[in-house]
Each structure stands twice: as C-alpha cells, then as structure tokens.
Amino acid sequence: MKFIRRFFRHIREGFAGVFRHFGMSLSSISAVAVTLILIGVFLIITYNMELATKSIENSITISALVSYDSDDEENIERIKKELEAIEKIVSVTYSSKDAEFDYYVNSNADAELKEFYELYREDNPFHDAFIITLDDTSTLSEVRSQIEAVMGIDSVYDGGENTYTLVEILSKIRIFGGAFVIALCALAVYLVYNTIKITIASRRDEIWIMRNVGATNGYIRAPFLVEGILIGFFGALIPIGLIGYGYYYFYQQLDGNLFGAVLLASPFPFIYYLSLILLAIGVGVGFLGSYISVCKYLRIRR
Image (cartoon, rainbow, N blue to C red; front, side):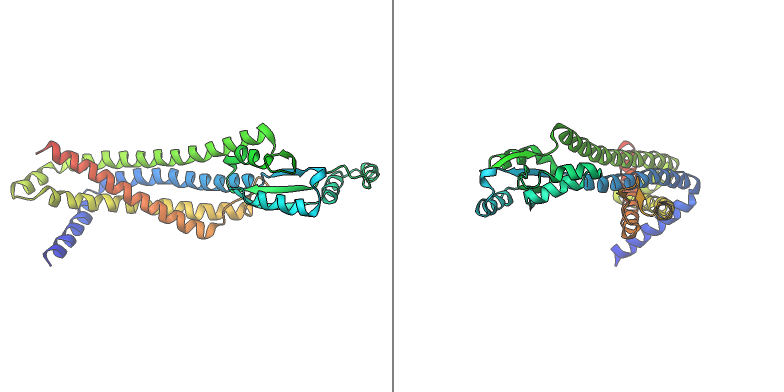
C-alpha cells in the first residue's frame, strides 16, 4: 500500500510540476512537437521510399537461357529443380522459346517489323529460358555465379553493372533514412534535456529542502521523470493529429499514386502504426531527457 500511495503521489507531483512551471513545460512540449513533426514526415518519406525500392527490387529478375542441346523435357525439369534449390531464389518460371519469341515480337509495335519477324518463327532462334526472382537483390552477383554453374545453362542476364549500381543506391537510401530518424530522435532528447535542466535548476531550492529532510535521489527524481513522460506525451499529440490528417489528405488528393507507378502506403492501418511510433518516441525522449538531466544535476549537487 505504501508503494502504491508513493506511486500515485509522484504522478500527482509530476502533473502539478508541468502546470506549475507551465512556461518551461510549454517550451519543452513545443520542442518535442516540432522534432516529432520532422520525424513523422521523414518516417512517411522513408517508409514510402522503402515500398518503392522494394517494388523496384522485386521487378529485378534474372534470365537464364537454356542451351540448345539441353532443351528437352527431361533436362528442363532437372535444370528447374537445381535452380529452385539455390538459396535466395524465391521463384523460377519457365518460358519456352516460342513464348520468348512472342514476347519479343509483341514488344515491337511496328506492324511491318512484326511481319518481318514472323518470317523467322519456323527457325526460331530464341532459347528456352527461366525467369528467376530473388528475395534479396544484394546477393545478385553471387546467385548469378551459382546459376551459371548449373549444367545446361547457356548464358545469364541480370542487367549488368547498371543493376548492381541501382541495388547499391537503394540500399544506401534505406540506411540514410534510418540514420536520419535516429539523429532526429537524439536531437529531441537533447532539446528535452536542456529545457528540463533549466526547470530543475530553477527548482534547486525545492530539491535542496527535500534532501535536507532525508529524501533519496530516487524519490527526488521520480516527479521529474513523470514530468518528462507527460511532456513527451503532450508533445506527441499535435504531430499525431497533424501528420495523420495530413497524410490522409495527401493520399486522397494523389489517389494513392506518386509519380505514376509508385504507390503510396495505404493510410490505414499505416496512420495507426505511425501514431503509436510517434507516441512511443515522444514518451521515450521525454523520459530519457528528464532522466539524464536530473541524474546529472543530482550527481553534481551531492
């Protein structure tokens, strides 16, 4: 019972501290809100870039052409099984040389050219082929080498250096996005830390009295931690409302499409998850900023 009474006492003191020093609290809440708006916007950009890059990566395929002397049914089945056994390959689709010929002819809109190509249908020069997709395009070069080692494969096409460069760029974009979000979180902690530090310094007499009557560091620290959590919580509400509504409006205006083929993430449940993330970040940076600040002050003022 004593623990429960103390727990609720700290919560009451935390609420009282926020409203008693409303000017400083408002400054901290504003700092958290501005930072979380930046984090929220960048999370939206990062997540949609992730979807776009994954879509681009999923469109990257490897074409493995079968040798002319291995295009019988038995060899085709063997080659397919060997390809499916290679790690990182998620699908292997067989395309006959007739299907390859049709695809090539139909990709040329010029009617005269189509008629010209049809002259070669009987002596079809195309290979039977396997269209291969991977679950991780960063292993493209390694998987290509394994495919080339399969008996009966004549040649392999994966787009060459341009494809490798594209995969590397997409990977760097994701890494940069994650690093930037972490940097913004660190900035939020720093801003809360500084504003809470000023609040604590302005209440040094209150802390000094509590120490003189025998209060422990943990007892002194608890209300400030509650204040930090409240500051983070209230600071997250505005960004959640603005970004949630803003993204929904933006999605509706663009009809879910960005730059034609690039699709935006559906607002629901994305907005719910984003709101929870922003709330967690707000509460987390508020708690951490308060904890660092009050611990540093108590250590210096022993």
